[in-house]
Image 1: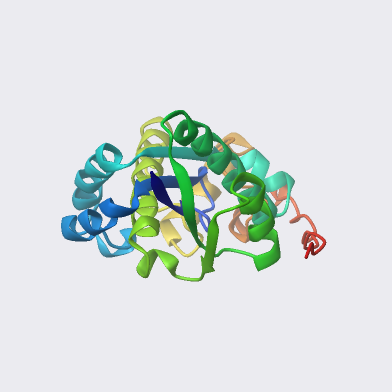
Image 2: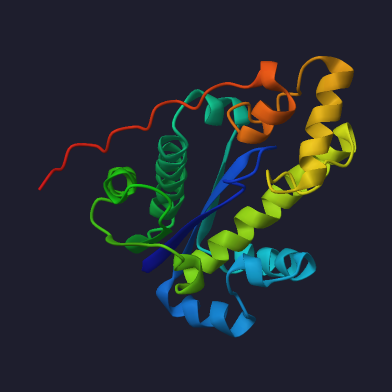
Length: 227
């Protein structure tokens, strides 16, 4: 039995919280079922619809794997490299589940997020024989990638909800959100430091809590090409 795997993330640009990478595998004959269900890029769906679809996606999928990248990891290394390592980990764990069930990986589709050679190297370590599609906006073009984007976004939303229950309402968590920046500034003024869920390498922290800011690591060089 052959499966196609979609890979996507949620929370890459946020100043607060984990980045989630989801890998979801589907039998080739089930891809049309995803389309019929209305699976599209998660950004085009309401939260309620994402929650509904995520439950159905997990039931239909041959296997699903999600890896969360903690803010401390994001701050300690190049973001593209951190995400590539998470993709590799998610795919390796997913392949183990698939092999137990007798599945063969025919194709892997990744919403491209960094240097092509970096992402390709990560995927090839887990799925060396599969057809590989790396495209920007793949979550809008390939339904298995759309499904992965929904799973990642739902888990990211739940994660943010839990942080807000502990820390109060900080808005969307994105740097462009004035409420997020004001929350970071206010928390820093009241406590003298920031909680572990805040990414120290983001410009928002440099502006709102300068002593907590950490410079971004240097960009990782692409891996050597192997013919």
